[in-house]
Image 1: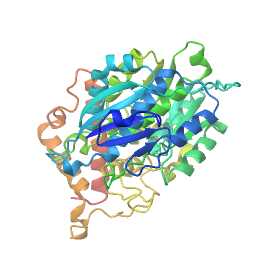
Image 2 (image 1 turned 90 degrees about the horizontal axis):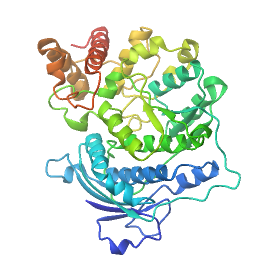
Image 3 (image 1 turned 135 degrees about the horizontal axis):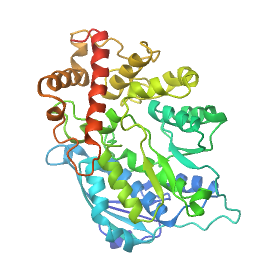
Image 4 (image 1 turned 180 degrees about the vertical axis):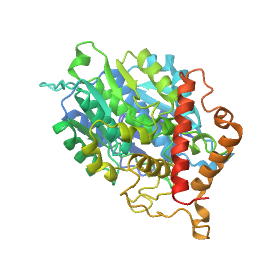
Length: 425
């Protein structure tokens, strides 16, 4: 699928494609997509001065989000792997084209699709506000509304840091994000935005394989606005995710590729850091919980009172919107969440649509993730963790493999303990 993503004054007719997308603007042409119009206004309203190449990285991320929405998995030869050929308008096309292989490698690992990326001139670089703001926060933390990011923000503040919280608004989580930011540390400065991507004939349900790229782009852009960045210092961008989900190993041989998502996989973060370093963007991406299970994160959180008061309000479910903004209780993220609550407190006040996972009847026959977890537990016991993981951590870009393996073992043990407790056989 060929996609061109550029500003509204771009000569789209000069670059034949299957889909044209207007970056940072609206279009009255129903066959064109649009993305980022409100986002641009939100950034300008902050009166901040992001680095030029952080705007370029944001433009790339917006283009990838649109491709992810527009690409239908069922229309690909294998029913899963899509092929994208995207052209993106940026400020510094020469730099990005010089490093396009790294960009393609990052996107391919993240989504398990095939990517050809081209950059062309004509990107966005708004004039700085005459009273430009340089926020005094000393780091950035992604605050999704999820449990891990909530724990992360609490711990970062408890360690004496002053993070700027950055969120991608999602229906069902927007108010939670604001409430969490207001509660932590007496109130965090909070940048909350939405890409508002819209394309004709989107896939349904939409793919979320590429969703983390836009989170990263927001975080990097806001990191480059801080006063310490403008003083020439490095800014830490905290991406808080438990190590089991970060690795997110396919539970069975049938759960290949991004059926188990790679949003914060160590390879993704390594490739992203390489790209930021080459771009001269002084943002250091850190997942402080890469060697922690979700249960360990909860038990070791540095403000237990705050966590106990609000942990149940966070969102973990992969099908949260589908079930009327309620946790399903049976997908992998829900299983990991439930196991973590069990390991932490032995009880879980979260309401789950499917609270009882044990019955072996027609209604419960569709609990594929529960069965996959049981198969994974049995296979790991039979062949050992390393053989069960297969190529999941085989990349030379993954450091500390043994520590990650032990983290995955403990995470799977938490799930096993939960299932035994629930009477699942």
